[in-house]
Length: 300
Image 1 (cartoon, helix red, strand yellow):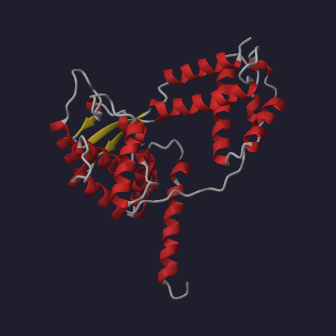
Image 2 (cartoon, helix red, strand yellow):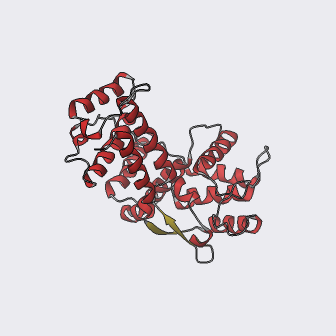
Image 3 (cartoon, rainbow, N blue to C red):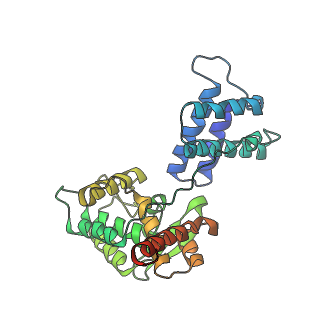
């Protein structure tokens, strides 16, 4: 017999052992902690046993999320975390069935990603290269960071995980550690290679520091620090606070597709397990084509 708190701790430890990113660990820890607190409010004595969480109780928890006014995407994320926990516990023999799979998933309207134009992306990167009016500790680092985000379409978690041994500027290749610790090789464009080489010439690191991107203390740059950097430059240059690291991944895929790249090749470059995940970019491109048609065709 195990308490919910014990099960959550064991599952998070297993996620860390499997190589889940820090962002994933934080998200799952937050959602599962809220799930745990719902069934054990502060001040109550006996923590619930996980075997006691019946389907009616889980439905009450799910209803409470709607009562709090959470949007469907947030509810879907929290439900996915609970289902993953129960799946793990079933595999461990703690539960006989994954009751959480019987909860109804809220429907959401599919939202296509906002795409950063090639002109805006290049203007932003050019501005980083030229330097900002506000003093930044490493213009060379920031430029290399932006060039890899847009030039390789990598996730922010993949960016900050890059070690010196993962990048081959001479050969123009980058080894990326993706979701589930899956590795893939990506080509690096000439501009990104030049930016990385410039950064490596000024990079200052303590002994045995393998991380490529470092903060002012010589430690590995975190995903939060990268998000803050992207936001800083985006507001400064474009006056847009909505741009984040994943914006460059969307732009990378869409611009490749618009210029004739094969969808299967884009899937490999992005590290998508399913082609259906990559296919959303075809919808974005079709939207762009329809906009051009509406503007230009006399019969539109």
